[in-house]
Image (cartoon, rainbow, N blue to C red; front, top):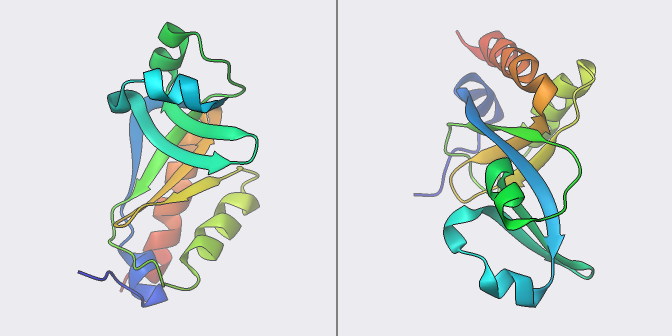
Length: 136
């Protein structure tokens, strides 16, 4: 299944969901990564400086991982194609208009947007309003 590419359909049907958990971004090295249980990792990206890990706040604290900031995750429940054009720009512009920073992770099926914890509910309302503008 390749996912939706029509921008209007994507926005209208994105069905944003605010996950209950609080997440953090942390950087670890390969040896630390090899000791982490995979079940605690929400996301991972290899950079020159180390491995960026996204994990629940509670797991990071339990493991003594250093982090800055706490985030909530909004999942867009539309299966967007990795080749879709404009969806990230649309929701980033909407969130930016509300002065909400967005850290976006694209999975195979869905986009996941990490926003500061204090802006979680506001971000959800913003994305719901954006979707409503495109619904018939």
